[in-house]
Image (cartoon, rainbow, N blue to C red; front, side, top):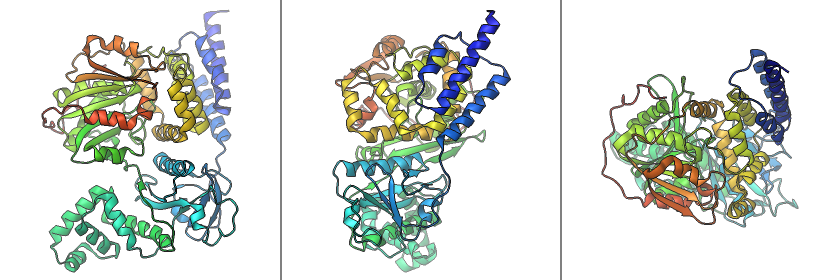
Length: 579
């Protein structure tokens, strides 16, 4: 058989395996086996690329998600312990059907925004573990919408609501409520405590919630218009909105929830939330998305999520960072989440984008921490920012070198190593992953990557919310396109000469002692004598950032602070260069 015929046969086998994967997202082994036995290929004929696009059609059809919702509306949803919709009732279904999620009796409640889904999963998990206190959920909804509040309570405490009487399945169920509008002064005190509003800010917010204009509110409060404008800007900053109309709608939603509380349901003891995504318009017109956690005036850190990560950090991050006096900025790198792809992608250009963001936010001296494959973008950014970076911390890091994915022969390592040799399959492969992503598939990947770490495997068995979090940030990272992860892998493959040259920050390595997925020796071989300190976490594998998040954040806050440095002008770093 000629080499050309052999290549044609190999391509046909890969396409066939891709179709199998599209129909069954758990069926990875045939594709990995074919890639292992196939000579590396960079490009394929257009006809083959067209055939691969048909596999995405297979994935869409196989996913089978129905559109639309029930005709009858409902202000409350009765949810089973795993999140399945058992019943709905009342009037006001538009609170969720307006782009928030897919709601069908008997189906799983799937909120459209991964961050919202994660908040819901965290709350349900608390009830599964025996919590009895109700919670307020802050749901961001589709991009551009005002955040909405929902009330989640053990269903047994609301058995008197019409439609729930005498149901036998309330004991382990939860009630998600979007109530009809009602006055609820009792909620304002909770709102004040949760968002650290001053008494004057609460008084202004209540006036605005009553429909008064700023000038009318100023007159009613007996203060100047300039004073209420300053208070309004402070409220915007604390609550996470940008317009007065958005603030009024947000407070109205909170009052709607409180209308049900007035019926005698238990009061919530906390609010679960993820900070909203913000956007910066770059000089070339592209959009860069990011989230900020903690305090605006806190010690600044840049966070770089893993190779399939977004700006979504764990639900508790906001409160932890605030209590520790930190300001953590996490970016959707170009082509991830809501950030536009970067034409002619290089990691140096990514670093220039993030430098522009730091200048825009007025951040001078800062520290950087990275997780897993986020080490590559984090390293380039640290080099780009030079003396502005005090510490660069690799957490469960992979060295930014192509072909370094030779950890344990688990599913994820094998996939990365083999598709690196076949970049032509990347775009289709990650498109299929975007279409067929599910919690069972994520659990399969996580179990395979946890082999060799008894601690990680035990964590998986006892913490389903961890799987929900990983699914949420992968879903968010791939929500618009898979270009980001494809561009990063291709750039890593092209650039064989990435080094630590030019890095001025102190380099720290934090690694799980049981991590066989991303072996520590590979990272130390890459870094050589440039590492300033290595900290090993006993009993932990590759799930270090997931399992030990509070301890990791505390260790970051304990790093010595360097003298402040001034941000550069907003035009700095805009000239793309580098490999």
